[in-house]
Length: 287
Image (cartoon, rainbow, N blue to C red):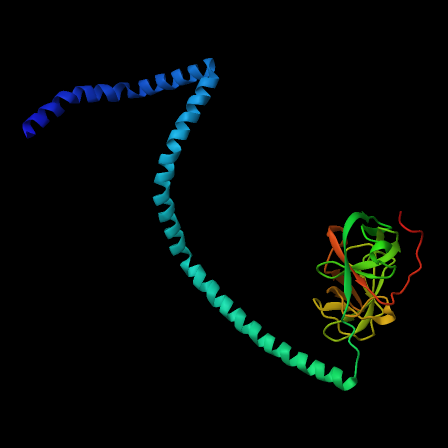
C-alpha cells in the first residue's frame, strides 16, 4: 500500500511542478478574462457578484461567530485590570459622596430649624415657562434672543430667563407670542450677584463679550478664581439664588466672570414666573 502511494506521488511530481510554473500565468489570464467580461457586460458581472456574495454570507456568518466569541473573550480579559481600577475609583467616589450626603442632610436640618426660629418665608417655590429660541442676534453693540412665548403664555417684562446651566438674561420686550431676551453679557445688562465663598455682594456688568465684569466690589475684598456666583436678589430684578457663573480672572479690584452658559448656543430656555415682576422700561413690542 505504501509502495503504491509512493509511485503515485512520484508520477504526479512533474505535473505538480508544471502546475506551479503556470499557476501565476493562469491567475493573470483569469483576472484579465473577468475584467474583459466586466467591460462587455457589466450587468452580468454585477449579478454574478451579488449571487456569489449572497452565497458566501451565510458561510462567513457561521465562521465569524467563533472568531467573534474568541475576540470578545480576549477583550474582556484585557479589560479586567481597567475594570478593577474603575471599580476601586467608583467605590472611593461613592464613599466621598455618601459623606457629603450626610453633611448635606445635617445642614438641611439646621437650615430648616433656623428658618422656623426666624419665621422666615420661603421664596423657592417658582414656576417656569418653557420656550424655544427662534432667533439669536450677536454683535459689537447689541445682543438679544427671540423666544416663541409671549403675553399669551404668561410672559411679562422683567422675568428672568434660565438655560439648563444657569441665568442667561431677562425679558425686556413682550409681544403676544414672542419675547425678546437681553443676555447678561450685553452692555446694558446689570445683575446683582453674591459670591458663594465669602458672600460678597457686587454687580455683574455686561460688556458685549463672553466675560462680563464684576463692579462695585468692596475695597480689600479677597476674590477667588473659580468661586461660584449667584444672583443676590437685591432690587428684586432677579430672584435670589440663580446660578450665574464663576470668577474667571482677578486683577486687583477688578474681576471678570465666566457665565455658566453662552447665550448664543442655547436652544431652549425657562422663564421664571414672578407673582409681582418688576416691569423694566423698554422699547416697542416685538412683532
